[in-house]
Amino acid sequence: MSNLDNNKEEIEVTTNETVVEQAKHEDQSYWAIVKRQFKKNRVAVWSLRFMILIAMIALLADFLANEKPLMCKYEGNTYFPVFREYIVDFGGSWPKELSSIVDWKTTKFDYAIWAPVPYGQSETDFANANYVSPLAKQNVKSLRWWHWLGTDEIGRDVMSGMIHGTRIAMMVGVVSMSIASLIGIFMGAMAGYFGDEKLKASLSSIILFIVSLPLAFFYGFQVRSYTISDAFSNSILSALGQIIIGLVIFFIIIALGQLLAKLIDKILKAKPSINIPIDIIVSRVIEILLSVPSLLLIMSIVAIAKPSIMLVMVIIGATSWTGIARFTRGELLRVRSLEYIEAAQSLGYSEWRTIFRHAIPNSLAPVLIAIAFGVAGAILTESFLSFLGIGVEAEVQTWGKLLSLARKNFSAWWLALAPGFAIFITVTIYNLMGEGLTDALDPRLKQ
Image (cartoon, rainbow, N blue to C red; front, side, top):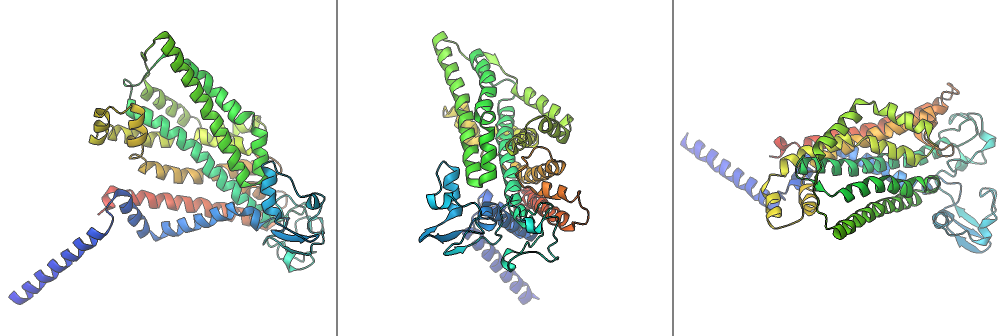
């Protein structure tokens, strides 16, 4: 018995030494632990892989489905029409030889390399109009031009619409939740860090902020709404470029207003003296927004405004920040009394530097969960609005709009199956990723 006990003790010591050695070589930082915990959830990992695949389809939509060739040789010169289209979107022009082309498919090239789906999202094939099933006989020259998911009433290719609809769905989810994250993190951080007593401002800064906020939105987005809408119908790069330009204009106008307020305070020798109960204000605004059904609010605003995918994203983002703000506020209430925040304050750092450099970066863990679920909710909301035929331009193809076409002809089963399955898969993937993040960020599982 003594030999057995000694052997057991030796095995336990060896095992403990092995665990200690492995722990030494592993990164024990917070996010490294979260990453390892996330990888243990195989469903969440596969959901992340599918999400990356969907994102790649969205990014490469113009190269996967396009009526223009990817590469062609015409009149002795080699061209890349899809790449050239991006240059045209940003103010360039087509070469003289290509500018006269009306129908790319009937043009006689020396040779041409076409996209896997050789149809644009709004291109009509009149020879295969009136709801042609993917299983029925199609009037095409060869299998290369087959409509693999059928066509709609006017002959638009459903697969091309699905691919370009993926871009719209991902853009709506990412952009709307980016807007919601900016608003929610900022408002929640202000409420949690300053509370009701620590935030003070001058009268001039308050007035100029109230005045500059609607001006910033007007000149950043409203004046440029047609430009932004056209960019979304052209390509993802031009859409991102126009959104970035709008955000830059927005923040420049806000910053100019605050600089003017500081100049006025300096001239008048005024000091911040007005106490702003930011916690109460943010909490009451959250309660008001939560008391109103968000879907009805979005539908009301979108129904009375001009159709614009940008407007849909802004409204979804502007009504979806409450959950992010509540998470951020709760985390800031916890971290504002920790040692590293007190150390930053004792070193004389400004309140804004302490918030943005130390407090917020260490409070984003729960926010990631809310963002993951929020992207799924935004995609579902946009699909619902498109299904009802409101909020989106007529020429823009979305999953919800394709799904609504099935109402006109119940026998066109492919119009309901493809977009319905895509919406279900995408929303499920983001929800599974959110659950995986919830488990990975659980402090009880970090051993």
